[in-house]
Image (cartoon, rainbow, N blue to C red; front, side, top):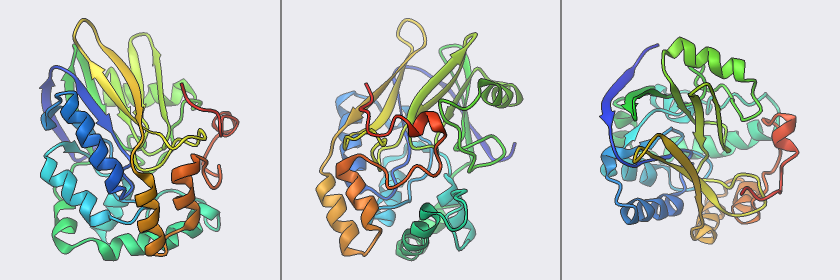
Length: 272
């Protein structure tokens, strides 16, 4: 593995989120939640994809930078940092996701200031820390493939092999867009979900996670709503994909191209 930042031992509540997707309104609401929960930036972790489908990529990057939380690169930030011409999301060529990315990615790339592009060079690919006696690693997709999609239905052996290779007890992942948790024999794979788009469950809610070490290691997914109508308005003003703007209120993804059957079959079913 390359580019791992060790942030030492963390104590107290940890807030984990990812997939801001250039959605400044959701990010601002999350900051209010962190303040109410009394969680300092040093105990807040972003799993990447700060930039994405919505209309304020530069503002979101600047917000994360000024907030001084821990963050890793998502595939989008990595490709913007490298000057690549596509988002690197691992969409199959010619799919709807691929076609939409040809709209939002060039917009995002051109909207981001050189200052923020330079700052992306300071963000690591992985974070390592110790929490509640567990060794933890934060990754975006897979260990070696930043764009690897890993879901709840992904075979535990795939997750276990990554956990074993990383030499940890806990993986915190991102990229898939859906909140989930898996565990076996005291080892965990956690995904907080994303705050920039709903979780395909028919509601406009978006998701984050709080870890706690008060008695023993625990975790819980949480959701919130925010002024998504403003986010959608800004997307329409910039001629960004209308389907993604509609998803903000409908809670239904335009398609399920990246999803395994188990996750596809849960489309429109509100997450508990």
